View: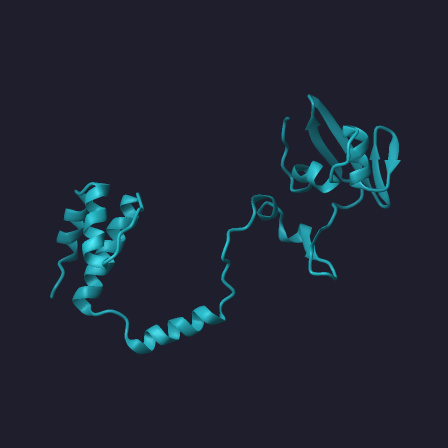
Length: 166
């Protein structure tokens, strides 16, 4: 079977997404819920070429399976908060848990809170806020909110270089 790719491509690009899904199921042998016309066209063309020219050899399939087993694949996407941090700001502590490193002393952390801009200066051994020295970001957050909250979470956008208004 020979596939005229240009002719097939023109026909596929004229189809609606619903029609492409049907064509995909015919060619590939499974249904899809994908709504991307570009993706569907590429996959149908690939399927037609694979049918015409032959699929992967058994040796190639075995090698792909070996490579997939050796790869550290993610089962779930990274959580948004963790993904926003740069690798320089994350490190593992002795227990394997993530530990967030602080900016260099002299850095000013800013955050909008209840309509007021907060400015916290990172010191060598603590943090300065409103003329007082605190030992931790959590202590600063507690002083600001009058409740226990994680300092890293309270200032998270400042730690990754974003500004927010709340």
